[in-house]
Image (cartoon, rainbow, N blue to C red; front, side, top):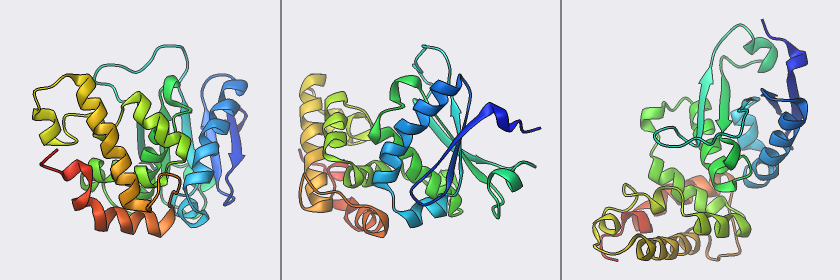
Length: 221
């Protein structure tokens, strides 16, 4: 049975609701605030309404997700509480982030692109992770773009991101520099400027149309 007193909730700019459960009330409130900072910036009102209300599982403790465990996960669930938590919907988005990435804009944006696809009826096996990361680059704030490059995460820095880069016989540091240049290339490709970001249908359509031209698909570096 759902116990509402164990939840902390807050509304998005579109009026949808984020429900957080886990940890103390203070931790839940802070997690929601960190999440909304980027969710409200990088997604349109219509996109948020497509996603609907969100269940946010707040992980407790200081242990980071490492090894094979993902730094974040997003899916959907169905149970008898849906009528209360997400009225008018048959399912609801469920997301969680490792404590060390709760404030990470690229990770939040990536997971919410997944969330939108799930609520549009697109199963996970049809989600192209590399194309999602490409779309992320177009949505990020300038500071989020910088953070993405500094921390070197996502498919731009992963062996599965660009095969040609993975096969180069150079140091990881050199590979990181090439990948960072790739991030900047794709930001300009998607938006025309490092300082400009895109959201909504524009972000989706440009990512779909321009993906083949992205750094992730380059075979000569």
